Amino acid sequence: GKCQGGIVLTASHNPGGPGEDFGIKYNEGFGQPAGEEFTDKLYERSLEISSFKTLENTDDIDLNAEVGTSFALTDTSTVTIIDPFE
Image 1 (cartoon, rainbow, N blue to C red):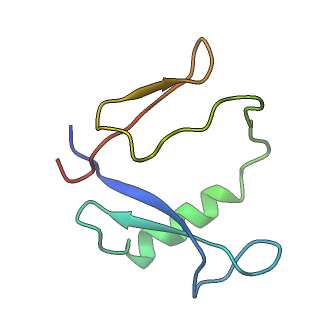
Image 2: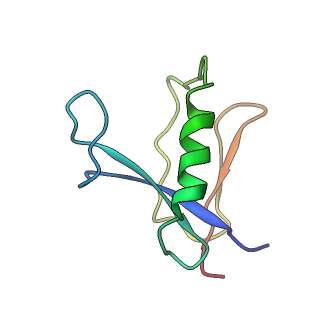
Image 3: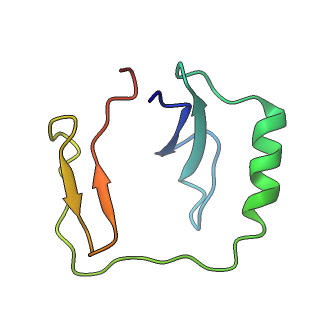
């Protein structure tokens, strides 16, 4: 399949986070920034988040691994390296 977009976590000119030194951006399929209509809806949905889960004591994920490499984090959770341009 094709990637329809991606989340970019970055030190940013769009400050956020506790020290205002962290930004979250969403780029569309060809790398262009998402439009304001989309980001406004995404922001509204983010206000509904009531909890999130983290994993502890897992191995680091090698983001430079070959495309297709999978990392099993738990019995039911896997991360697979993809190439968003393929």
